[in-house]
Image 1 (spheres, helix red, strand yellow):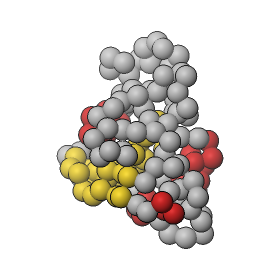
Image 2 (cartoon, helix red, strand yellow; image 1 turned 90 degrees about the vertical axis):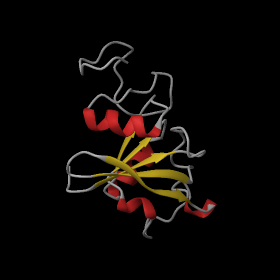
Image 3 (spheres, rainbow, N blue to C red; image 1 turned 135 degrees about the vertical axis):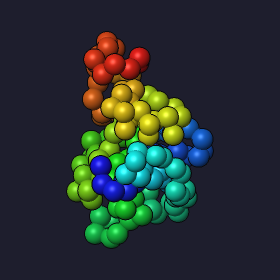
Image 4 (cartoon, rainbow, N blue to C red; image 1 turned 180 degrees about the vertical axis):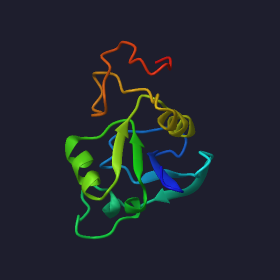
Length: 134
């Protein structure tokens, strides 16, 4: 991790982790300090034209400042677009935004169910060996 890492979480209601990240316009942004402490640093409430699904890749975007984006689901195109911007996308079944950030940092973020549209790492419904209960 950098001295400070920014992790965005797609959250259309600012309460839970939501999916369809390419069309999402609301994100909670958490700052992770060098000592691994986590605090909510910002809330992005973007206009419709700022949703990544329709956004012009040649222009700067507020999500460019983040390092990681946690979401309930996203398409492969969104994952590739964000990677080109230097942002790693991680899909999860975790519904609590701050819990998702802590689990990501601990290396035991719950993967989405196999039928989800998420494209994170799947463990096929069995224990992944990370030591966390899924």
